[in-house]
Image 1 (cartoon, rainbow, N blue to C red):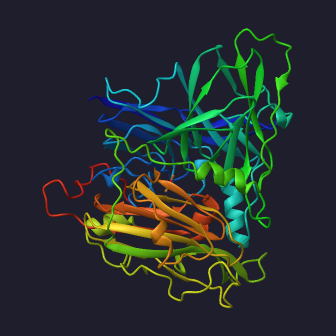
Image 2 (image 1 turned 135 degrees about the vertical axis):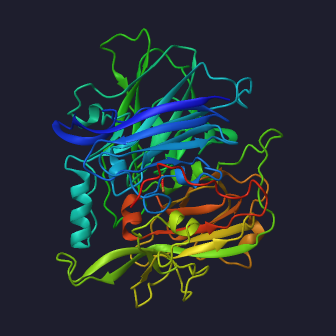
Image 3 (image 1 turned 180 degrees about the vertical axis):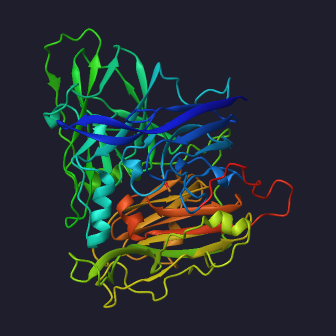
Length: 537
Ligand code: C2O
């Protein structure tokens, strides 16, 4: 195995989209940022140099970071941010993982433009568990605001109301021809007839789940979140922020141009979304320049059946080489009610003295000013408490009429897990303001999604239908609107691990918490000592 070295210069770059220019935060001047390549078992060293006026931190989303929580990246959870003019080397080894992941800024809303692909190839000589595609391409989906995204979030925080939605979605940085304003005509996926292509799809958008489809072509899904799945063919992929999906496309149609579309999924009518469809072009070599593009219409934004048919098709590959190690017994059985609420806010101008908040088990997480991992390892008192509730304080009908008191409590609370214990978390959506699909991401682990349903989770009957054989393994899972999903994992990674909704607006509002996993007793069961250049708060 090798050592891979990268240098990330975080710098401003004037960028033009939608007929207007603004200065955005980038890595090395690129949007989307550079792709990191590594092989399973490689060590990756990324020197991040902060040349902008903002504090910065970068998260390697989905990398297990076994015993190296110092390199995980969420600001104030595992590290203090890298201050302007400072640098930090993220140092981690890729263990037991191969596939597509992403990296992104993990502070405020900087990930709007600070993100890119992380491609982990199998070890040399280890084939994919499916026919090797002729070619591979990275496809990053994101959002674009004409105004400064930091200003958008600051305005929302001051007013207590929802922030403005983005002005466009993008495919590899471009809204595409449909925006009428693309200088390049959008991303072109050039293919040769008869060849196969693996697309490494990444949703780096801040706040929107996306459908992805290609006119006239089926997509064979082979991997999600860097775990192999039983291959299946489908027209439309659903991909939430933070999720990744590898699909294989055969260039088996006649020469021509075919529309590639990324469009929003949101099944709650009261939530505003950016309704723009980002488009790109699948372009066969040998196609005449003036030939028309075969069109496809994206699913309507509330196409829940399209979303469900994708999600319900996902199964772990569960082969001899890639077994699904689903915990069969659980030591910690937790129920987390996730949703929105309303808190008093006398200073909020626009919200009539109240603000929208989000919570897990009625706790709106308050970001500390010292990183939790430092506080834990160096025993700094007063930064967090270990009393995060394992169940909602007052059980209620989560998908029925909201309780009369919508206010949440605030705190920096973690839930403590013994090293190597097994954990089940039922993530239950609440309809306090509106039921909404929350893509929940867990740092430091992959988990198995053993069950999913609508309405209130029933602890007596629902577990009887859990799939404990080949459930999909992921790091980010959609909690269905007005429903629940049950996940299981083994707490085999000592440290402090963030869990949050990957819709950035909900994270900002407080839909986040952290697990603290103790050190084990064995020689390789403790978090490694912190690096010397770990940023200070
Ligand atoms: Cu991709 Cu904590 O996030």
